[in-house]
Structures are given as structure tokens and as C-alpha cells.
Image (cartoon, rainbow, N blue to C red):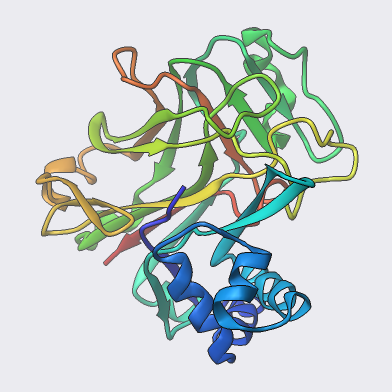
Length: 308
């Protein structure tokens, strides 16, 4: 479940404060060092650092709130134990706000229900902030006019949803880069922490990169989920970023292929096609959950940035 890279800007004030708090203690930094090598429970961390268990629990909570580590309940000799593990490998903080970025890029936020094409199979469904849209596990619900209000959509095995983003800015300026971000995870009935899925993004029909998602995440509530959403269902995803530059195509900073910004022909039609899905021949055909701004952890829809 390790995230290779997390990128933040000055707009993410609450998260920056939580991260600042996490790094304001030498003990918490030492805990992160320990978790680079091991998965440890609260008592083991306390023993290794020679601190009280109660103090260990407080430090763990701060690191969890900063989203630098996560915990899972494992069976122990006397009931269950809380095991901690690191989920971030690199952390980057861009010292500018979204308003500054708009001077360098066209930023387009696409509601997840505004897809123009799809192919899905059960399990599948759509919900808004207030309740289900159409019948669950019925692919025809993806034609429902209310789909534009979607805040969570999901489909199992292979399939895709496709979006079209305007590229008007490219009529007068040349793209220097492209960045796509969305909160995603695998899909199975309810949730399953051992459910991998190879989730691929295509830009104008060209494969930009595949993320091997490890889980259909659950076990704790998504930070933005409405109260009516059941605890037994999928709860949150991971925020993933595909970036296309003159050097190649990247996923969370790791090179996925050699296709550059020029190879995607972003200005050759009146829109940029973005398809998110799982290939028929994928090794892990574990479906997709796609989160809107009112579900999951990250509070955003699909975001496309055209660097100019």
C-alpha cells in the first residue's frame, strides 16, 4: 500500500498543518524511521523507543492524521493489536497556491458523473451525496440523467469511463505538460484490502500509465463520506497523479513510458479524451472505484492541468 510520492500545494492548508505537527517531534521522526524497516504495533514502538505506551499511541495518532502512516487490526494473543505501517515514500510541497498555478496552467475540474462513454459490468453503481442513482449492479444506470450528480462510481473486473476535457487554451498556446489526478481504488463486493487492480489511464487513446492498486479500501470511514453510506462498503481511495512532460509519461513521479507531451496530439481535436479503466488482458482485473469531492479522503473531482 506504499505511496511513492505525495504532492501538496499551499491550498491544502489543513493537511500542511497536520504534516507540520507530525514532523515537529523528534519521537515521531524516529517512529517513521522504524516503520521504514518494520510493521510494528503500538507496544513494540513504545519498547523500541523506551517511551510509555500511552505516549506511543498519541504519536501514532498524529502520524495517522498527517496521512503518513496507516494502521490495521491484527489478531493478537489477547484480542487484537493495532499494527502501524508507513504509506508515504516521498513528500513534496509546492510553495504556491492554485491561484498562482492558474497563471501557469489551465485547471479544469471534471465532476465524475460527466463521462461521455463507458463500458461496465457488475459489480457497478453510482451514488450521489444523498443516495443511490438508479439500480445497483445494473450497467444501464450509467445512462441515468442523474449521473451528473455522481459522487462515487464503481465497476468490477474490466471496463472504463471516458471524459472529454476542453482544450481551448491550446488554440493559441502550446502545452508544455499535462497533469491528471483522481482518487481511485479497486472494486469488489463491499470492500477487500487484498484486492489488486491494474487501473490504466489513456489520453487521446494512448496509454499513459497503469497503477497496480493493492486494495478496495475500507475498514475505516472515508473522511468525506456522507453519514448514510454504510461502513461495510468501500470507503476511500488513493490520490494518483499522471504527468506528461517533454521528458515522458509519469505516474506519481515514476516513468511509465517514453511518450512525450507531443505524442498525445492534445490540440488536434476540440477536446482531450481521458479514459480511466481496466484492460481486458490486465493481470489484475479488479475493477475501479472513482471518488468525487464528497466521498473518500481527498475532496476533489477529476482534475486536469494543462501547463502552458
